[in-house]
Image 1 (spheres, rainbow, N blue to C red):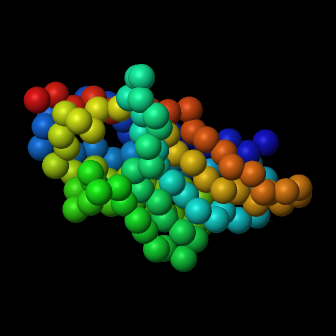
Image 2 (image 1 turned 135 degrees about the vertical axis):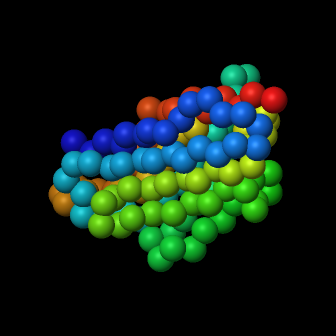
Length: 120
């Protein structure tokens, strides 16, 4: 069974840094796009950053220049380095991967979410 597990959330002060990780496990053949989303209670989930299997990345305007997405294909893991954090970055962060299993059809998987809280 394919699963995603997130880690690295927590509390940071404004201007500080946090690094999120998302590791995929199970019978995986390959992983296509990997993405980070975030959600604040009462608001829609928004795309923060995405990275293709070739390494091309895109970012939401609100995090450009502060966040960096990366991936380790050998470890089926994705990272989000968050620098110069702002209180408005406070949210639950979710990872998302398009995974091709060893058997069966591809599907999109979500992590369980990790809370990031930035204090002013």
